[in-house]
Length: 388
Image (tube, rainbow, N blue to C red; front, top):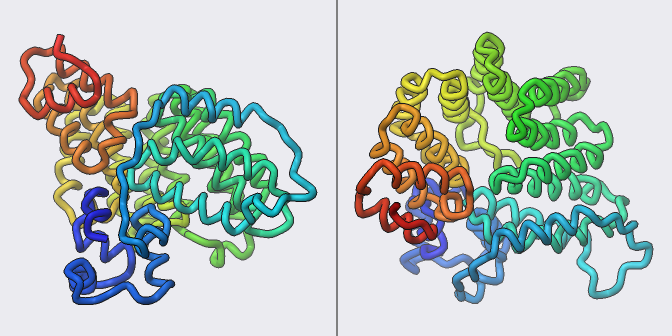
């Protein structure tokens, strides 16, 4: 457990918060004073670490093989292009709905931990199996939304917004008008549209989903409220900033901040999207960058990373923000600060830096400014870049 936790860049306190235990409990387990002797606890720990319970039970870990990102995207594209009907008579070897739901959960945990190679290896087969599953149970209805959302958000990171838009649209279709599922799918749709520079469409998608949630009579009983509404408001704010609507961006962020005031920083939705005061402040910084106020963005960033809430965010969220702030530093003519941000991101979630075009572009820009620090040179070498 200690090895897996350390690989994911989590301190004992952060890990303890994720699994609902004390830091002392984590320390005792890692030192062998206590044992993981309850299946429910093993499953909780495995989910937080993004592994199957079997790995914890056997005590055997392994290094994941390198994933060819382009080949993986090709496989995902091929899976999205297929339209096989549900299998009316699944074979004995076909995964059950519960197994597929568990696989989707592990994939989402890997995504939160920034383990994108693992996600890329999982998605093609998961997409194919999900498409063949007959929607006869609630979990089966939820499954396509979860899988298509994960596909869309992963593709956005890999700089494939058109494919991401397709996957997000599939998620919206699979949501079948249900306000909660539609809200989840709309998060991914808004992200894909922002990546396509379609800020107004992204704003509309997110706010339409918020409106549907507002009209839901039993809204108080929906899972992850007000986190879902708050996350949609932040997506709408970022989209508004993308098309330079500063007034809308500020107003939407303030609405999200009002919701975040009563939201637990430790709470993540089922897929791990973090919403709370810290997430709102990071969105405020990104919006400021999009609106051209780079100094304000850096000021917010420096304040937020010094707070306890920063460490409670998923590794993917923190590393992604650091990549964004690296570009902000570059826009301010500060390549040294940009380099420090990328190195910090690499410590938190290496795959976030080593597989994303946005990180590679920032690193290339830093190298072009002149001699780089040793840690930047090492990072460039690991990514496959050389100093020009």
